[in-house]
Image (cartoon, rainbow, N blue to C red):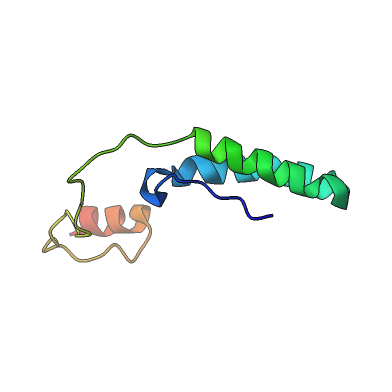
Length: 88
């Protein structure tokens, strides 16, 4: 039987679902095939309990916040760079 919910996918908490799934994995591994579907339904119900609030107009662009700096990358260990700086 297919589990159907009328909850919009954007209202589901991704981290909440991941958290519940990680907690249910030992139960799935230790259960018999008869109880598997029952535990699966309990997992889906638990995921539906962790809804995020409806936040209309929320869209964030994926951009880098920091601007590149004019300094070179640190390619040596910090203690070696300190010695070179003190010797200069």
